[in-house]
Image (cartoon, rainbow, N blue to C red):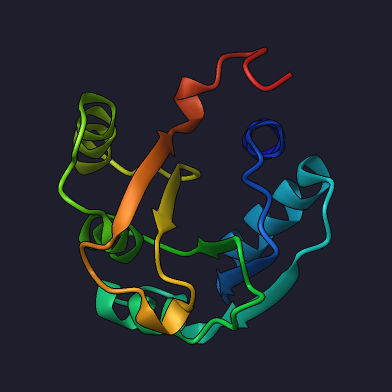
Length: 147
């Protein structure tokens, strides 16, 4: 997780807020990520993120305050993977198509899907409205990738 956190910091993917499942494993993930992010985001633990289906996860995202931007969700599959797929628009270019195909093949533990929305409020986020601007798996980050 420190390597993913360093990658996120380098790319400017530092969240203002993190919604995290109440599971011990996801809490540990956040604890390992925070030092590498070099940030102090607001953290909200949500029991409904624990093995929730994607529509439940969407409801959690839609409940975020306007200031919770960027927002990070730390949860579990299959719901998290299904949410990322549901939220992303049909790919418009080759890069987005490649990211979407990689996401659809497998969303492994500690992977990062970055979606951008044109909506100013989280409550307006709907399926098919997000642009998948990045998708990174831990194995994509070689030993020195984030330094």
